[in-house]
Image (tube, rainbow, N blue to C red; front, side, top):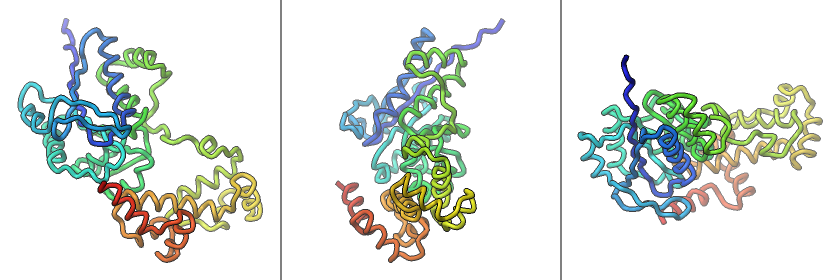
Length: 332
């Protein structure tokens, strides 16, 4: 009779400035609980930063670490080499340009180490050149800018994605689901269920479960036709549909759609459509380096001047001012 060797997995959590605590804690805690349920340390972990100094989370709380990039490089060829590295990041990830960290991640990956990213960690992995032609997930708020910055990455608005040896999740409590998936792959569903009971969750969500609240809950709208129209609008931002095309899709007249939107949304369908296109434009201005004219085209505007006029009317600043303010904030 052969005895299956005890599974042991060592993980390095690499903390990037302004990382989100909720994603970090919901990734670590299921590992701790799995160890408790198993009765031995199947999972061990250590925290690392670029220079070995404490890292401040987006909440302002500083977390001490055990190692630096230099330390981790020394460990790569010895018994302390990790089996997995998980990048923890959060807000302002666009300004993170640490070439040493990118090179280290590539080296670890090339040595067979699994690589993961929490919240906006996919941005760091893509900057390191690890997500070309890979499925990945990122927080919905960062998805527009990420898609433009890294067109070779197959990014999805999923809770988490596992593509071969690359693990990414959208952050928040999605980190829990991704780690439960890892635990289930290493052990079995029974252990996952026991961990779920400890953290008071009744199930592991599927990778493809939605990140955001359903439109009905998010907008407080109950009318099914209005929800269908809004879904159509959100799927057609770069090439907006005409009201006639929308009417044909949902089987209503233009007048009926106008009346429904005034009742449910307090504005015309044209105005609502414009607002969600400008919201996407704002995300692109903040998260990408696309020229303003390309942002305008990506959001369905025929000219940069018309885009700037609409943007200023809604946000009381020009697209150029929006981007300049963002650059100033990142430089601070």
